[in-house]
Length: 496
Image (cartoon, helix red, strand yellow):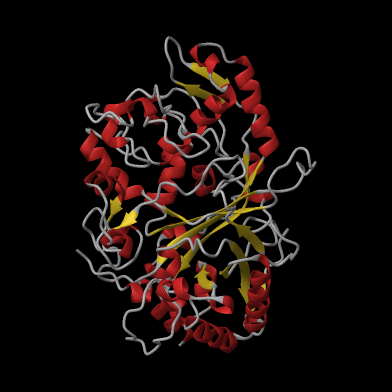
């Protein structure tokens, strides 16, 4: 098993910082006329970046912030800082420019390559489903307008709003000589230079679902070493480190930073960032109308919750539909072994989607043991496409009584992966946006931004399937970019 150099890995890879529910994302551009200032800033910042663990002071910084020190921190020390750079940003630093040839095409081209006046939108725009209202032509940052050029992003995390504002002020002052924050529409806050997000106490996103439940566990990580995991848990969720961190073996048993690749990539990963605006009023109205028209054996239940659960594949409280309560405490039932929280599979327990619809969000985002020639192979294949999510909510909670429905709210979607094409883009294109996912004949992800076939949503049930018509997507892409989250040593190399 690979021994990961966690002391050189930024902390965001291993933690979503649950003690720091308030966050800010500062998009910036380097001052092109001050390259020395940019390198000096990065050099000083490297020692303050939150890292995954303390490796014993090999780099001479025994007091560097780590996830361990964060657990013990109090007051002003209770915060975290992480840094990510785009291909454009790397290209403005000598060490980064020399290494760009070793980075993936997806990263170098960016999330929204320029459109061609003759052939139209670039292949990636179509692949991601970023069309119509979600086209990069409409984005507020990262797209084809004046805010398309992004060099990097500073991610700041704090325990409360006041601490976050203090941290923002300090970091903006520190970076002033090196870079300028990009001015955007300031979702989630009043400062037009940054985006702010948070994790609510109930861990729910704006549609009302508990978020962040299913995450892969990196083999060899502190969480994996703690023990207590069942064999099912290991088989389903433990993933080799090379799927998320460069320099280690992945599920194909290939080292992700092999011969000829830039050493700059070691202990780093790619970070995908997308601002996804949610139409909460539209979503609630759709669920209410679908429930009002629902006829059948579900009449004895809360029909709105029945519909909402089948769009996502979990109840709003987070219980997976593939683990029905009827099986949860019956050890003689073959489904029971998959009924504890997140340790479930689909093939034997719910192959035909009668409990968790085939086209539901969680089934598309992680098909587990259903996309392959047999269940075991399918489960191994699915591990090649896992992502680590570190998303936060932005905007006020929707409250119809408070008449704040017109306010802007949504998800600041953040995910980490070592292969943008084979992980994030593959999930987006081949699973979430695929009209024929799981042998379906119509439809896309019920809560995604892409729509086809008039918005058809198919819910399997007997004697006939239920088909709902979604009037329009409940999510709209407002901005996005591909970043590289470097290791600590790489940040120092970029500063050299």
